Amino acid sequence: MSANVRVSTVISASFSYFCRRFHRWQTLGLRVHSIMKEQEKVKMEPSFLYNDLNVFLGKYFKEKVQKISLNAGFSCPNRDGTVGHGGCTYCNNQTFNPDYCQTDKSITCQLEEGKAFFSRKYPDMKYLAYFQAYTNTYAGLEELKRKYEEALSVSGVVGMVIGTRPDCMPDELLDYLARLNRQTFLLVEYGIESTNDATLSRINRGHTYQTARDAILRTAAVGIHTGGHVILGLPGEGHDALMAQAEAVSQLPLTTLKMHQLQLIRGTRMAQEYAACPSGFRLYTADEYIELVIDYIERLRPDLVLERFVSQSPKHLLIAPDWGLKNHEFTDRLKARMRERQTWQGKLYKLKSAE
Image 1 (cartoon, one colour):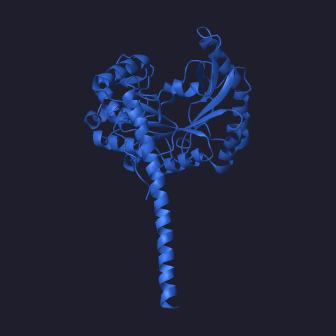
Image 2 (spheres, rainbow, N blue to C red; image 1 turned 90 degrees about the horizontal axis):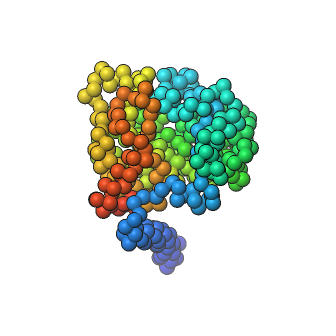
């Protein structure tokens, strides 16, 4: 090869590399500019505190929409030995189920009873069937299809929310849900719980953070709204770890996020651990937790929809912390404190480029 040809080849390769890098920088620059515009918009709108679920649902439904929790009789691979035994150390599924959620009742019956309860106040309300208890993708495909489609056939049900584990989303099910998503509103929620593998092991979660990340990426890639759950205050996770978690969660293609305070529930292994060694747990007061949540959401992606900040468990099951606050009362106090701090979701969010 002559010197001129070699020089020409080098120049051509260098130019090609420069073009690829320029395109990447340009794309990143547009993303940064978009985020900066969103943040500037937020600064000009002091009434904005965070992205609310009802506002998000309002983009899809004209009527008021309410989720109805269902217990479809599923199990959990972390209980039956497939992944592990005993389940997650913090988990008692009784805390998730309203009185009408009983496995001896059909899905249709549970939905009709839920509708009867909510329609007293809002007669024109529409509903989302919320498959909540245990792992709602842990069954054969035909059984899952039968239960999902039964729920969607009930009058007034306009969509579906499925709560599950990130290690329970096989390809054939995801393909089916992608098709279903083109026909109705669908949100799949994954229990992330923590982004720290040591914590996930300690709470006997049975999967790693990478497993959660992969499931979320796969689900979002086929166009399905994807949600995540995290628990704030798990043993061993202090303020710095949780701020890093907020940044990690913000890099995922999540549509929605639910935050839960750590609660000690009767009948769980974690309750036994707490009784044996209370000093190993950091239980927040309501005011302390409000400050933590604000610090957390300041670091979240500005467009992430925040569905909730706290969980509410039945009094007879809750050991601690017992704040005596209903969810809406907590949220009102959170908003008031955010206004005092003159802050909002995403105020400290930092867009990270993928190298």
